[in-house]
Image 1 (cartoon, rainbow, N blue to C red):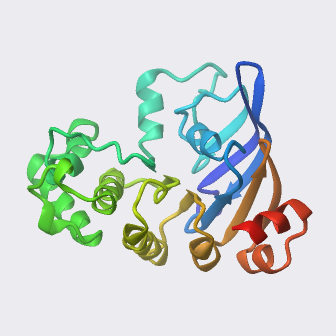
Image 2: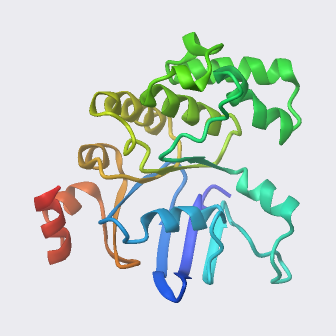
Length: 251
C-alpha cells in the first residue's frame, strides 16, 4: 500500500544500566522523505537509529518498516534470527566508522552481502556493485583495498554497500563526523543525490546546512525525548522551543 509509512515508531523507550536514553519516541517517515535528527551529544539520536533496525533492542514500543513490525512476530514473541535478518535487510545502515571489511577490495565489499544474504549470482552482484560505485563516484577504486582510501572515499563505498541490498530506508549515523573537513562535502553530495532520487532517509547529523536544504522533517532530541519536530524552514527560522533556539545559535 502506497500510504503505508516507510517507518513508524510508536512509544519507543530504551534504557542502559537503569538510565533512560529514549522515552516515548513517536515518529512517522513516509516513503521518499528525508528526516534529519539533531541534538546534543548523548541525547539518544544514535540509539534511536540503532533501534529502528533492531541493532539495539527497545525496552518498550513498536517499530514498523513498511508496515511490518520489526523484532516482534505476529504472536507477540521475539523474532527468530532468520526473520529478523530478513526484515533488517530492508534498511541500509551507514555508520560513523565506515565498517568496511579490510581484507576485501572495494568491489568485494559491495558485492558480498547480495551474494551471501540474498543469494545473488556473482556476475549480477558484480554488475550491480559497479553501477553503485559509479553512483557514488568510486568506480575507479573498485580493485583498491580500504586502507588505501581517504575517509570520504571509505564512506562513499560504505553508502554503496548499504545500497547494494536495495533497502527501503537508508539510516545514516553521523556519516561525516569522522571525516576531515575537506572530505565532508563529497559525502554530503552523494546523500543529496540520493535524496533527489527519492530514497527514504533518516539522518543523524550535525550538518545544519544539509539538514535545512534536504530534509522534509527536522527532529530535535533532548534527553531522550523529541521536543521539536517541524519542516526545515520553520525549524531553522522560528523554532518553538528555547532549547532549540539556543542550539541553533551555537551551531
